[in-house]
Amino acid sequence: MERIDTTVSPRYAQIPTFMRLPHDPSPRGKDVVVIGAPYDGGTSYRPGARFGPRAVRNESGLIHGVGIDRGPGTFDLIDCVDAGDIDLTPFNMHIAMDTAQERLSGLLADNAAFLMIGGDHSLTLAALRAVADKHGPVAVVHLDAHSDTNPAFYGGEYHHGTPFRHAIDEKLVDPQRMVQIGIRGHNPRPDSLDYARGHGVRIVTSDAFCELGPAATGQLVRDLVGDAPVYVSVDIDVVDPAFAPGTGTPAPGGPTSREVLALLRGIGDLRPVGFDVMEVSPLYDHGGITAVLATEIGAELLYQYARAHTRERNSS
Ligand SMILES: [Mn+2]
Image (cartoon, rainbow, N blue to C red; front, top):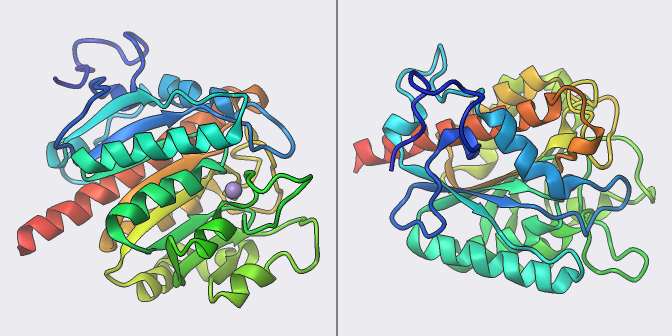
């Protein structure tokens, strides 16, 4: 199966898979499988992330996978497909989490890694359960306006503000090799960051990131993560709502899209084993700018995976 050829078929034509990748619901032996996770049962404010994967795929026809300063095209380096969406019930979060974990574990049994397109951030817990099952506790690079280490709210143990608290409790991640970047804004309690910091998680606030800049922050990430297998989770609300308004809990005062993309270019020096781009809510988007940014971030993550993978192959 081949990608849809853009020299033959215009980018707005054909059925939209992510970046025009072949659709393969039962992939085997792939480097990265793209998988949609349409779900918003964990949102605490604006809903709509269940429509995220469709919006991102729709806009992703724009992206070629060959950048002006990238050298070879991503898909000349790695073998990727779009496996479609996980069938997540909108009615019961526990069922949805189990369904997500089972699907993602299945993908990891037959393929090297996945890129999950959300969907609200609660599902990252299911992703980390699947990834830790294969790799043991992983390092985490988490880009977000929020730490997502909150306790239960309204009697609900699981929601989109809590995946990393459970991931730490369940020892799915190594908190000493975990960094949260872009954290800012309003939190329900003044001690909202104590849980993460108390477990050794490194927090780079939005102000600190903007002051340090992408290069120095990238170096900080590389020093912290080293050669550990790393999961990269991007909540689109890490980017200032001026650049990404289509999201559930927007927080003004964030980095620009350019700064976040520049930071992600440093991830290829790490050893990524899984990715997600979460929290795109197209109902609040304008002109598709949030979905375009999410697809650009997904494309950058795939390219960085290709870089890391090629380097590994050349050195072995
Ligand atoms: Mn989040």
